[in-house]
Image 1: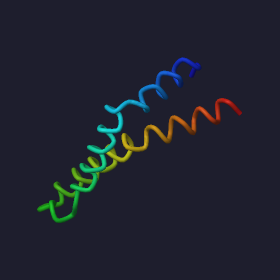
Image 2 (image 1 turned 135 degrees about the vertical axis):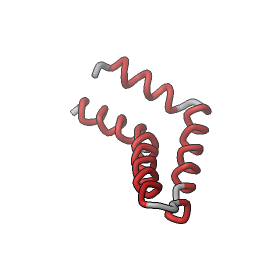
Image 3 (image 1 turned 45 degrees about the horizontal axis):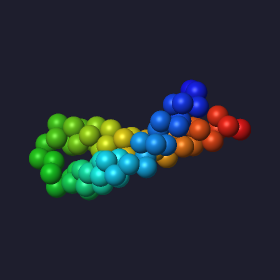
Length: 72
């Protein structure tokens, strides 16, 4: 990845829209509960949903860590 990629990402992370998106992800993760699962199929669907939501929620930290490793 080049410096422009990381610069663009850092710029995005500083926007109000990114913060709002992160808040919405956190709310969505909290809404994913076992109580919402009425079947095994619901459970597996919820598990997949939580996995994707957590991956998105962790994108900023993952990218910043990758940038640090790239700089090392």
